[in-house]
Image (cartoon, rainbow, N blue to C red):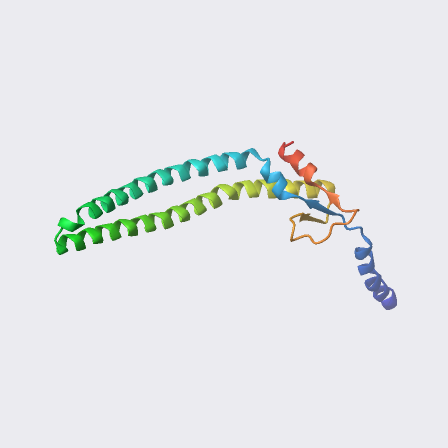
Length: 167
């Protein structure tokens, strides 16, 4: 009896390894590029960028005007006024630099905020296809990550596109 139990424990792992592993690849970049949510995200980011660009243009125009005034009047200014005007120009430049930094951070944050639900939707579709087809692993066919794809690898990209209702 003891030998039988030991024998069963020894061959049990062989049964696990004997099961066929089904591996599929998915090109998530290709799928995301045709998702309508990506187009909507890009439009939202473009509108946000246009607003920031408009504000930046206003600030730059203000700097240009003050600088032109300074250059035109510098010969007739007293030293004290020159120093004050130079300080104003430096302050405006500092505001422009700060605004640029904050705008870039806001744009990045908004992009991440808009992209998260799209990525989650894609992950859910990939998981659903994997569950339906019984794949053991589904790898992203991203160049630089998957080094080799053999002839027997299954491309599940069309299945995930169909799950998302994409062509």
